[in-house]
Image (cartoon, rainbow, N blue to C red; front, side, top):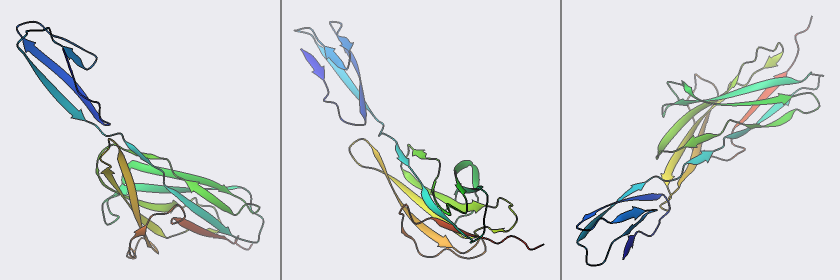
Length: 193
């Protein structure tokens, strides 16, 4: 006869069998000869499938003046629950090119794969590119990504978002994350000569 475990998402099984007649264990099944005294041990390992979170946002440039294509960069640093201690080893980046003809753009940050249950925090801001005449956005966001096990062999992610006017102000109340929740606005007014 054979002993086998019904497969479940997220679980892998290993078998060991000992007894008077040597059983064979192959491909997740143990085969035992008739009239054998055999002990079968099944060990399960649970590893839910990882989840990928895609942070998105929007960028708006306010100007009525001609502007050559300009690249704007954005960063989301792993941090603590208050937005402190940014970690450059846990960094998501985004970049868009904006021109006078195309002043609005969507930001797609590098995706983040989570393989462990927990809550992960990211401080999101625009990177000052140093272009003369551009007023870079000071607003910042605190993203909280909660990773949970869906109970069927996979992780899932949900997120909330808080905003503050600048690095010296406090974050507001948390709201559910949406792809349009993160937004940055710049004004372009070249210096007069």
